[in-house]
Image (cartoon, rainbow, N blue to C red; front, side, top):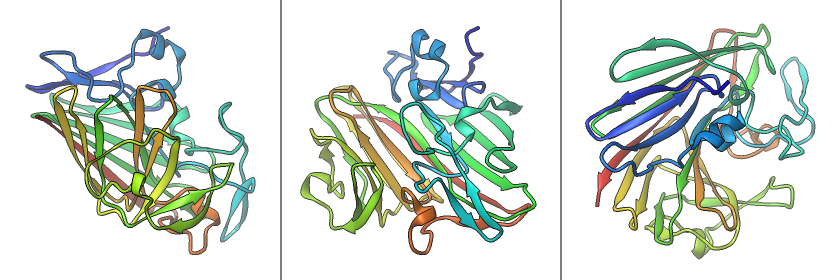
Length: 289
């Protein structure tokens, strides 16, 4: 059966959410023209049954890849296995692969909740709000397992990519990667990846994490006549994924770099005791050019 969609509308935009598909956003578009503000999901994408075909999904209790078959905590080793046919490493936690339930709903807000036992017990909550062309996504995770564990958060939105799409997201450095797309070193920004000022996306593959971010981002869709002014909190890093030959790209606000569980100092991760929480938010504001 096709997934159930929930809808929010403001005077400018319309939002569709698929709780059963990982608590994902299916579509966010302009009411007047149907112009997609996030990558659009058609019926085939919905029928595929995976958030990776949709517009945005949550990353919890970590984002991106973890090497080494798991990670260590204060009470020992937590073994992990690959959870995606597209990647040999465990990726993006477990929240995106489970159905969420609706906990609250009114004219401007939808709240979803997930009680997960994988890879340990936690509760995740998402709050979507839509007012005057402003989409707000708030994500919170509360650790419920008896043993403490490392936690991180992120969001994985997909954006349309046109010939004149530009990105502005001031960062200080970028993590260079190996063939497995795991970080090897922090480096100065190459000119083609320096988004401190609006810049077109590179023609080559980009799948890297950026550090020293202040949470501000602007996505300029000149061909489509609009821009998104964005602000993240609880996310000091972002990832940019530009696959070759595709009409989309990803800009992912995250609390930690890739494989932070194995990096010195566990940058951006939080060791949560039972009952403790972490949260983040991402706000996207539509503006006509």
